[in-house]
Amino acid sequence: MGHAELIPNIGKLGILRDAARGADGAARQHASPRNYTKAEFPLPTIESFDVTSPAFKRAPYEILAELRRNSPIAKIALPGEQSGWLVTRYGDVDALFRDSRVTSNPADVYPPEVIAAVFPHGEFSAALLQSMIFTNDTSDHTRLRKLVSVSFTPRFIETWQPRIQQIIDELVDRLPEHGEIDFVREIAFPLPMRVLSEMIGVPTADLEKFRTWSNLYVDSMGNPAAALAIKGEMQSFLHYLHELIEAKQNAPTHDLLGQLIQVELEGDRLSRQELIGMAQLLILAGNETTATLLSSAMLTFFQHPDQAQAVKDDPALLKHAIEEIIRYKSPLMNANDRWVLEDFEFQGQRLRKGDQIYLCVTSANRDEERFSNAAAFDIRREDNQRHLGFGRGMHYCLGAPLARLIATVALGTLLRRLPDIELGTDMGELTWRPGITSNTLDTLPVHY
Ligand code: HEM
Image (cartoon, rainbow, N blue to C red; front, side, top):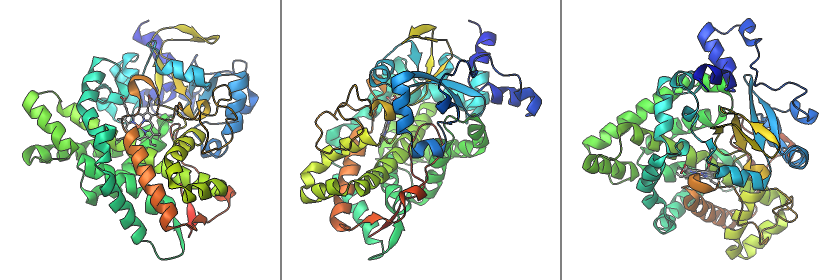
């Protein structure tokens, strides 16, 4: 299939066309042939749901259960005239994580000009996608991942335990003795951000900038208009990383980025582009996800006080409880986008080259076929270890040992030091951030 035929397949066509012709309503009326029609889209309940919306994030579970039962590979409408396939059963998500007929890199299917038009980094997008392990399925993935893996082994990560303890203690010390705070702002975001920036070697003074860039990026996922709107900010992010890497080249440091630069200088193994891609990925992939885990964990404990009490009484239960939280309230709604490389049939649906696929880990982790009594939160459950919250296959989360350690140290400390912490608002008042990937709370007011 040539590029001209492929272009109409890309879900983000509306934006591409607007970029090419100037955004006007008339241009938008020529619907892409790959956009769903009502007849193609059999689930009326889903049609009204934008899966990137805060409303869906608030109560996704019943809809996902309905999809697993009746429409496990569902055609979904996304903002900006996009459509995609939402895969909701555990077995299918697991299989597609490892299926070589799909790719994580849209540049494997679409030409650079399409990629540049629809991704937030503009003309740098195709090169950046290629240089990040997240979006590279080639042998370069193995090479790049190997270079950073040494810094993320469970054994190495354990050496960070005292520092993580120190940071969470400092964050708790800073709180007023009693009162109400936003848990997201005071604890959930700053903790992983500080740990990761020290680990990677980013100046602490710039953490607010990173929080902004990270939020903008995550919120725009699955929404091309939002992705285009942040182009300027993403260019600033890249520019910042470029300068940071240059500074470290002139004055070597021992942090992760400093080490990766040395590898570049000695063995010429990491290009400047790859260094930027790696730094960006580590910052974006680790912060929001871990912050989400921390606030989801607190919320889950508030909703299940008896199980929170069990963990307070026996802190040895905490590690296992964290796995159950990742299963029960997965920090990610969907894994990173996947793209169909060649036409094929999957569970009765015909997937076509260029189609976009979302692997819904939130749904897979609630699949009754895989987990008994899947809708129940049970910190003593034995079958939760095989959850898909960290993905599966070649892109399995590099930061899983770090996320687990941060969560164990932080939640253990919080339950010990703020034993009477409770939700400071009605459940109905809580709001979630937009974007197709994360399940992140805007704020989490708490009393203690
Ligand atoms: C609770 C927190 C976290 C969750 C739920 C999570 C989840 C995930 C998932 C589901 C994937 C697979 C994505 C896919 O296949 O499309 C992934 C990959 C990845 N994660 Fe995490 N993550 C978390 C924390 C972290 C941290 C702390 C880091 C550290 C910097 C990190 C770095 C990465 C990287 C680099 C990849 C890509 C690996 C590759 O492509 O080979 N993550 N993560």
